[in-house]
Length: 422
Image (tube, rainbow, N blue to C red; front, side):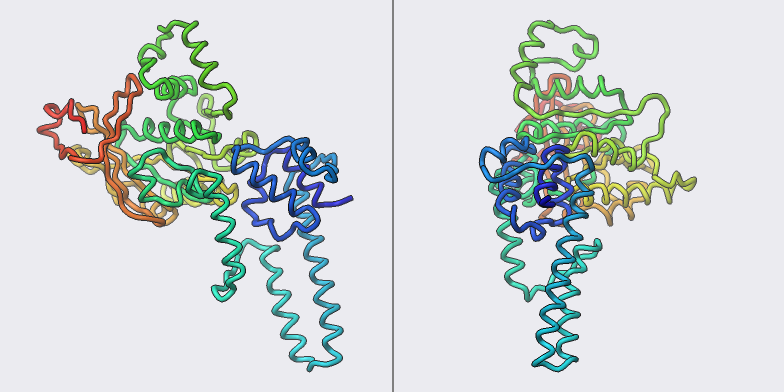
């Protein structure tokens, strides 16, 4: 039985291609390399893993294999076969070389070749910048992914100011931190990013420990409707159900799932819980709302240790699942007046751990008594700083970016600027 066929069949059945993408499995395929490449291309283009029959239609000689185990099981099996084959090849070459070369030279060459196999057996990877061929393969892979994803290897936010300053997009393995004062728009804004990802064909998952999934759904429908519904009406059920059903069918038909997760009662939610939901739903983007409400896997008694562990575990969720993760976190102020401006990273509790782990961090700040939300970068490991405003009718879900003539607001003039627009 061909293990490559088993692995591809398992991916199609379990819908978890991220297991292979996170493990850089390209080199493991030989006889089924073209089928694996086609599977990746399909995923990048349609944001979904195809049924195995789609691959059968394209590759007539491909024979799927019934699978019962998780995809990781077949990946480990293929790795073992790959490494065993390579070791045998190295030993045969060394035996032949001993007839002509000195033993010390043969041994050195063996050690060098065997060392290259270690990247398939552990999570520590080495890159030699002198290996131009390896770099070329990497750039070609990134180019192919960018073309399939609409110009970036990651998920675009749909907001020009961010997408230009953050060229990788919300890329696999990135931890993005959204900070803000309580009740100032950070959940609304990150939910908007989830909506934009969903409209592009991706599957977002929001884990909200702050509100019931039905309340979060009201917000999502408000933004997707863009003026068709009012959040206040949805919360009361005061809508025309026939119109809603017609809109819903037209809006969601043929689209990916959009998953909302919440805890029931006082149940604790840890990174391990989130991993279980990722395994269940296979999302392309995960939003965690919000940092201080989660518990760590060790259930530490110390607040400092717990939040430091959570930050690290959220980063590992992004890396191990090969998806972007947005961590919403609240800022703390010594004085109420400190909340007049977007918070700095230093105003986030346990900010050092979060700041180190984040690939990108941004502050989201709705100015009091206005329809203006200010978004400003606080860290961007992969690009430049950015700052812009959104004119946001939160109740109706109508959002308009403002890039020019940015308003300067403070507590005294926020009321008179209530209707500022770009």
